[in-house]
Image (cartoon, rainbow, N blue to C red; front, top):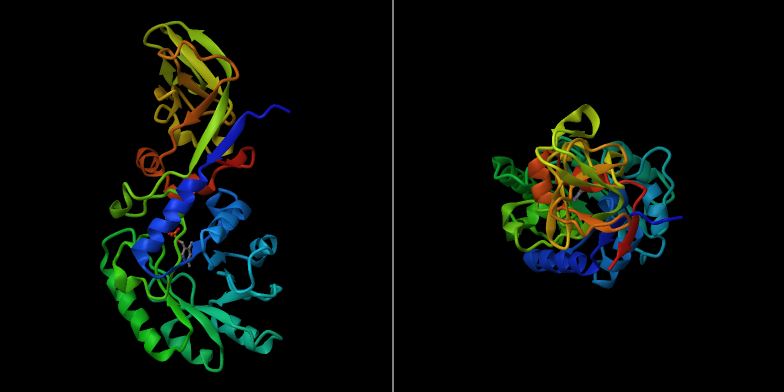
Length: 339
Ligand SMILES: *Cc1c(COP(=O)(O)O)cnc(C)c1O
């Protein structure tokens, strides 16, 4: 079997991003590793961050927790909490998100075990309302969380959520309090509390302008050339003939497409690199193929590897696809490797 599609992850960049966020937050720094660590590969990410000193990991489901049995007890929590069909893994805490879940936990065999709780302070997504807090009486709350809706914007809701969270802290006893995601870390030290929970920025996303120049790109998709072809002036390239060669061109056809998460929105917008030379995507991105203008790189041959440009902030601005979707959409056909 020929390897022809790879994600090159840079472990030094992941660790450097972790260190930067930890320094910036100046408090315990966890990691959101749900959705296969945002598409990068959860086991490797968890091991690298564990080695870097991270002791708080967050997945969404118990199913995701099941493959992380190498994490030390007490270092993993499940953000979707304790649902009717959930089995609990020893040493893993649920983040209880509704009064029903709190009641279910209290009635379970685990009632005396530590748990986390999510309180909604204005996002109106997941979490106990501030009126529901009475149900927490008698519970041993390890970490009390809330989650910011607009930390990537300068929105009045940030401060409102902070104030509501401070009020909740006055009435609910917990071992620790935690509010900030990646973007929240840049809102200032008042938002840091006892623990921050970055995801996106660990993986190279730029959640706010303050992160520019600090956060490093972690992953780069690479694909091999399947064919080099000459396209005469006036001929079109790809589906729907959206690109017509303005001159005689050399075109590289590479082995990646929207089925791999290299989205159709990159048509005529994206680019790849060969030795720092930029090769623009021409025409439509197909399911498994992309065509590049390689006229200026005559040395390229079938089988050569090319790096796709995948700076998340830039790619998001170009395509209108969020940095989160660009990462989590990366497909199953890549060989993921760390360098
Ligand atoms: C996903 C998630 C995070 C991480 O958010 P980023 O914006 O990726 O940093 C933090 N907290 C909770 C509750 C989450 O669901």
